[in-house]
Length: 603
Image 1 (cartoon, rainbow, N blue to C red):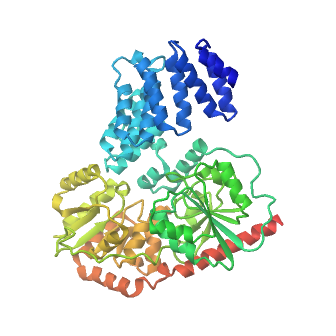
Image 2 (image 1 turned 135 degrees about the vertical axis):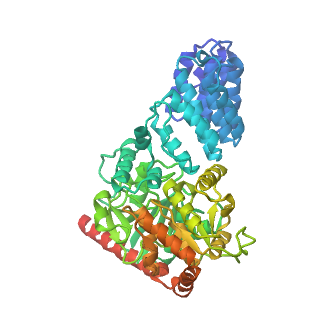
Image 3 (image 1 turned 60 degrees about the vertical axis):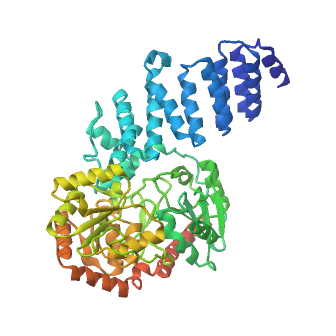
């Protein structure tokens, strides 16, 4: 190292040799030494290639998360070579890491708006695509959906074969309720958009179980690493209490965390140990503290490679690993592929098949997974006798506002639909507008997720003859205030094919009836499962016409909605749906059976 530093300080060492030495240092785990090498060489040389060394130097600093230092080095590179697009792209990433998002967008804009593409070097297309796609990603995170979509379209015009961009393009249109969702771009065909759709997007778009299965299988084939080694749980002694572990990045203020907090608390600690393996964020909420406090052990997996995470699960002697994420955003399916536990079960986070080779079971009930649906799941069902869904009986609501305070009419029937906007399909939305037309004086109370969806929903409502003032948009609220809202509504209208899940549980817990349509897939039957368990199966419909007719009937007969509310007030929280201790015992019984079978096999 001292010899190399001496050569670097001489100012005469050729750059290829500097790069070779720096690479060898990095490979040996001496990144700090590689940084020092580049720094000394750049300080000492008058070479016209100093900007290249600065680029490499900045890349190492970025990998070390020394983002402010990396920014300074990339700026040094650009001061020497202002058209050095690669440095400008990386500078944008360093600015983003420091929370300076508008500055990052400006750097990427300078690349994709380059007047002279030849100035981008030998591969101008890939550099412009990099700039377009990262700017679009960041704008989407900022909920600047219209700008993000516009950049995605420009990117797809340049290269129509980008499946990842097509995937985001489809989903951003779903978030904006921009119909038709599959609007072609340049040479991008409807088929390409369909085949690029994420599993989450497909759950919004189709009730075809075969299409959902194929979408999951495509994702696994393209994105999940194949594991040919023996399962990591093999040959490990398991005895004593049954060890259950929950795998998730959503054990915080998230729908999964909100549903499952009491599950962890109610496990029978005399028979079971309860563990968490998680990359959830520390959001500082009481819910987060409560979840962690219910665990016998909590193992953070931030930055832990998938195989090592699976080894930790195996070393802990876990009998049953419950994956709460599936293929949803932020999931780590690679951990499951290594099979750290003999029994690996999918639950709640993905109400559909994941097609993951490491997941053999899915918790369900006979409503969400009837016999005809089984061929479209790679997992075998673990049937619970009532509803599949746990929830939290400790959730509390604040005192509700008056209807006037909530922007609702004091008189008139109030339909509500608080599902996320991306779940709203054009078919269902136009159905809701027909319902409003047929129920005079009624309004529809909605979640105001983003202004683009609100504008599109309002435009289609006007097309259907519904005045904009009959749509009441409510902003997001804290959980206790959000729960209080349900008491002001007469009837919740469910989405299809992506039913309400956590929202349906909250709604019934607060005593407001739900009208749902149940289809052929797990996710399109969630609310029907809850209604069956709570004792209101007559609010389950199976066709769009039946759904519309039932909504109109109830809307025209407010006394009928009031009777459902009385029933829920008197019997809802005492129903099997909210008998959480019994649901936990049912889960434990099945987990114990499977775990003991696995122990016997491996003995």
